[in-house]
Image (cartoon, rainbow, N blue to C red; front, side, top):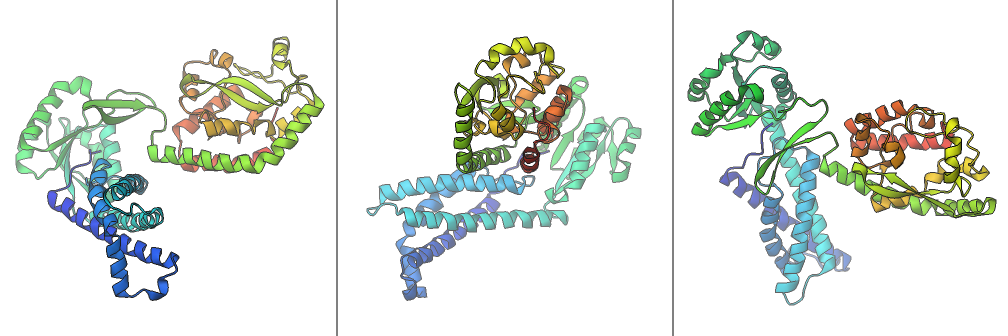
Length: 481
């Protein structure tokens, strides 16, 4: 799809004015809130509210000056016709946090009384509510406006193939983006039957582009031709469009990779095409990390009594440390020490070689149903995954996540096939899709397939679904070894 296009100067000026109005309303409400919490609400009148608001005018001035700067840096003043509300909300919160920090320092530096933390927090919450509400409502209103045929971007498609069909489907499934396809250019007119259901006009062959540019009102050209075989033709088309100032968009799947998605960005002004098979939705990844810290911290506090009881039982039954530390392989082959409650005898690692013939798992995994090295308390805490609880510390440190593929041993990774190594492209987890789908009863191949499915279909909804399914799976002790 199209790269975000800059708004006109008039639209930007209007947005800045509306932002300033929202900030001033936030200032007034924060002033009333401040008076209310200070116990002076009974004496408030329209005149006194105005006086209190003016007394805090420094916040408005500094914030109103800083907000457009941080807003511009976070793309709040460009056309965001294709952004979802999560991305917009994330940029608003990020801009607001930066503006409040600068505002606090500026007020403290340039005024005699300094920055009042209580008032600044009230002002920040009010600004978040009013700015956020206005911006989100504006986006929803624009989507509704565009879905009725207003503010359209008129586009031309060049080339008829599967990638072009995918683009057309995306445009028709999202009418609120405001894109209108004016027609197609294709040397083989019969191929246009691929778009028969959309009833798109056939405007000519590739060589007719100059004529179409002269006669049609077009905002953007989408070139869907294969780059390797059509490089010179694409280059000449781009020159033609450049000459009349019409934007050119290229479908970025330059390489026929099976799973990787492509993404364009710049590195110090250098255009980069990124190919990746791992989740890259930064706002959702940030929310997952926040969930790891919040849920992990809460779970640690709630599990402290269980930690103490388990530690005591382990010490009473056998000699050795309470915790077991083992080197595991994490994201992109980073090594880390994973924590567990010790469930085996002290010299369990030394005994493993003698038990290799009892291994019940195919592939690189070592599992024995009635492992003689497991202690009595160890068998119980393994059944209900209590031995895994210390991995909360790994989650809080950032080595692991609550949800993800289980972290393998280095010796297991050495036996992985090339495709199986993709399990290491995300953070390992305390629980995962395989853990709620059978745990140790699954074959290694099935486990890998489930882990790769999780990576390919990753979303916050899937993460929380796995977390919820983990609770009954653990309580029932299904498939534990």
